[in-house]
Image (tube, rainbow, N blue to C red; front, side):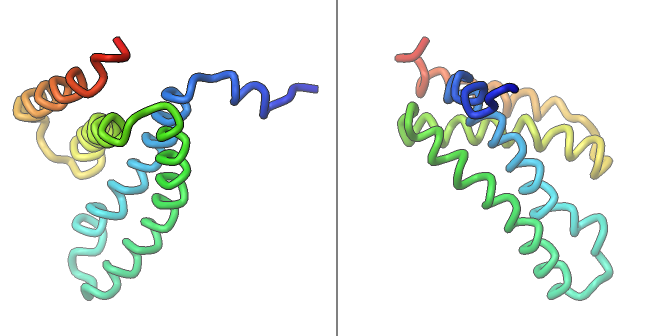
Length: 125
């Protein structure tokens, strides 16, 4: 029988952190923006309560991701990693779910964040 705890603990912290951050950001994108598409005609309190409900799951994943990541990353590295993941999740969400046009501005924003990531992670390169 396979020991899953040993399997997961053998995966480097940064990869486990990124995986949790990706999942968390999927929920975050829906909590923050899906009501604009799905609940635009609903009363604002419905949008708020539904967003809070989704955000509960987001925080249930984000908090463990941050605790795990902080065991191997500095606070600044963890924050920049979160921003890289956030943009990486947001762009497909905006294009495919919200039906926003894919803009070249996303590329420029991504390059700026990658520059920030370089400076925060250059001691690990």
